[in-house]
Image (cartoon, rainbow, N blue to C red; front, side, top):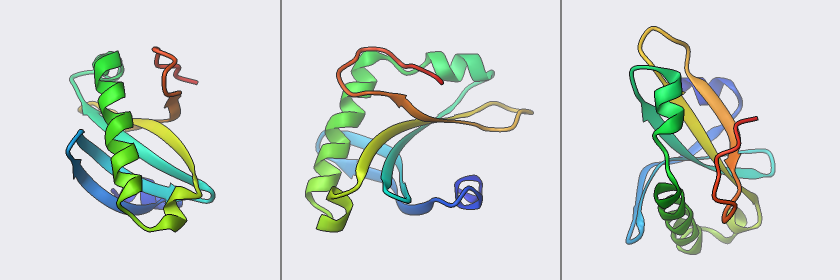
Amino acid sequence: MAWLAAKGYRLLDRRARTPAGEVDLVACRGEYIAFIEVKLRPSIAEARDSIGPRQRQRIERAASLWLARHDARFRRLFVRYDLFLVAPGRLPVHHRAAWVPGDGAVSLI
């Protein structure tokens, strides 16, 4: 994703498949590794609202498995869960740290 590369992210994996499910993008920047869920909907609001608690839990489990099977240097990074929201005719919206594992809510800052 050129948008993330322009922001200084290094893409590590795309459609990262694990037994727990798939993570759309895995990228790192600085001391963070971001597991990024990409949502394409008719509006940014619909994209934001389309990720529920079960999907967040699935992404968290998949991220944990991804980290377990990759280089130890990635395991030393801080983990973050991001949303990348896309709607036709709009610029993409990147929400960093969109949720904290186990808190049960998406907090878009």
